[in-house]
Amino acid sequence: MDALVKISAHTQNGSEALLAIRVSGDVVGEMGALDGSPRSATVTTCGRAVVFQVRGAVFIDFIRRHPEAALTLNQMAIERLRWANQRRLDFTGYGTDVCLARVLIDLARRHGTRKDDGLDIGVSLTQTELGGMVGAKEVTVQKALRGLSGLGLVQPGHRRVLITDMRGLLSFADLDQRDVSPKPY
Image (cartoon, rainbow, N blue to C red):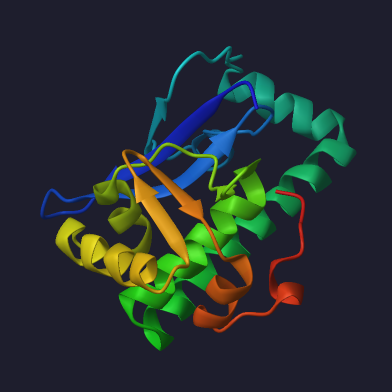
């Protein structure tokens, strides 16, 4: 993975929510180009990144001339919508600890790297940023991480989380292996 960016937005009360993580090859900023609205989020690079900016009119013209690109863009948007819908379902049906476990599993599936002692989620995130992904305050995320760590499922560190027992974390998250098979993003 050469590039990593965080997509975030602010709520009306000023809180920041981490909406998504994007990596090399991902398209960002397409919503504004497609519907002409102002941007709805902020993209922040997390280290070195080479980006290519395509102006809205050029992007729209390209999509019109290449229907296969439009189909790929639609598939990408559907996958992102499914991810967002799943997070909303998680928020409704589970407590913060399970929501956090599910997000950690998803991040590890998409970006994780094997280590001797487990699976690193592959993304450097603060506990505040993790909270933004699960709709929780930092103190609640700290408590959830302590609980998951106490169960031997994860090992939190500075801006990192190592999954030490994936099967146990899947069980805790009320998921099975089929629920987290790799999917294109």
